[in-house]
Length: 465
Image 1 (tube, rainbow, N blue to C red):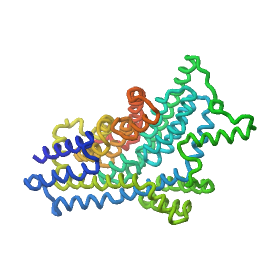
Image 2: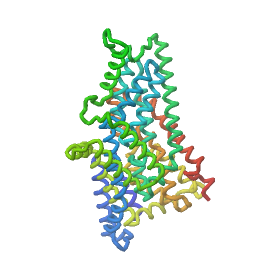
Image 3: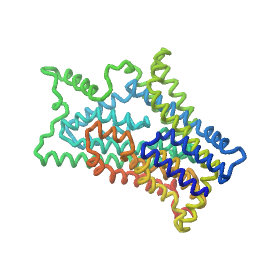
Image 4: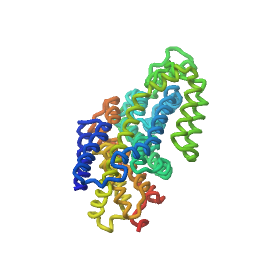
């Protein structure tokens, strides 16, 4: 009975999210609550000493550091975009690509990858498309290439510790985000190199297509209307100004701090180094960095308040989701559903396949996160797979690492609002986009999983006995 209730709860939860009957936050709270009441009233649940409500409260306490991490990571990277830290990178890319489709495609991957560090796909796609779409159109390149490369880069970088998938996997399995993420860095780097290679090949293919069609490739500077009769220095100034205008960021916005760009760059670099060194808990690092960044860039307390408010909508939606997820996790554990479901799964898995559970989870994360949301997979499916894998000596952190490799594929899903925004901004047909992006996303995910297996951070049946 408990197994049936568990599967029914997960199925209903997934249906309500996928059909958009409820938002993830509401579904995460109400569905587990209803099933918990039913299980307790009918004596089906294996209620712990503190009761189901006690299990939920304990889960909320364990999720609090993750909520703090997300809160201040969103503030920090949002602030860096506000003050113009990434603007010089945009100008540099525009200056370097000139008339080369291959360089432009690689530059797209670099720009999308850099901006993806804020953990927000929508921001990445807005900046990348706004900055580069005019150049793609001037050169006659297909905007599908732009959307494909940007999506692949964002998908690979989506596993950063302050990104949604890693946080979900870490919180639901109660493992430190750094223990999950740092061993996956080599695989992420390898996948990003793969993105750059795929981008180069796509750009070269576009060059051949354009030449075959008889098109004449012009420099980006020539395709823009040059300043009439100006000097070389005036032409360069004009080009830089135009580059800013197509970047999607107002070059005259009052949040820019050009005199502080070196400070902001040094602060961001220091933050990333400390994150890699695991010197302090991630929430504390981002709290400190955010406080310093706001204080230095916006000394006036009114401006400080405005900058926090500017990113409030992103913060509220993400943090609310984290705490709502605590209800689902608390119910799964407090009623004994996780153990019952895991036992049922273990019973149907052939003994010879069990030690491969981590690899299986990595492979399943690709199609499952394509056809369902991250919330449904990480909060509904991963805890069950992890519990089952524990019977074969596979730890939760190993399962969490495997479960995040499917993110390049997940970002291609029509269930992802940021992806729909991407193709909308670039005016690309979804079918054309999927023809190019899905198989390449699978390649990137397999590269990430393969490196993790080779390095031993994701165990296989050969290492787990």
